[in-house]
Image 1 (spheres, rainbow, N blue to C red):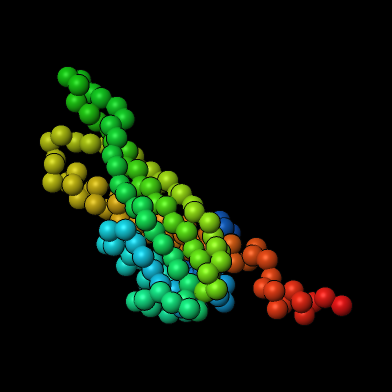
Image 2 (cartoon, rainbow, N blue to C red; image 1 turned 90 degrees about the horizontal axis):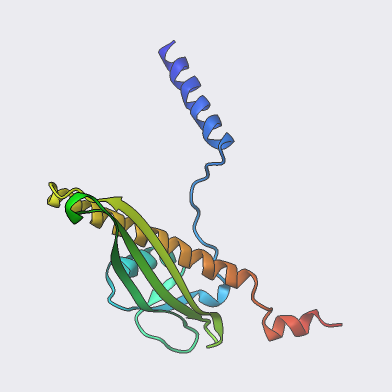
Length: 178
């Protein structure tokens, strides 16, 4: 009886999640010209690690050096900034916004621009508690990690979309002509 209840509960949860439109994130399907990628990220850090992980999950070999037959993903700008939003009594700041700006471009293995220079801006807002400075610092770190994860997904899906909408290669175009 207990087992039947568990199975019925799991089925009900699965049905409810599928009915609300929830889907697990999938890996980006990158174009074949990105079989090998050289990644350059300004400042490195979490964004670079996240992009390497996402590229490897998409079955792309991340190589250390650029060269012939190697696509390039360049991220010259990846910066965080904070902004005060509201002030409470006695001019105390009670809300902040964390902004994350990333600029990037992608060149295919043949050197052509697969994705021209792009800029993505993201932001999260949070309430600031002046009595809990340790908690505020960890909250900011968590928000930054969340922004980096979302940025990695946004970059990967833009590259995927560019690959889907790229014009066919010259050899493929010539083969399709009568």
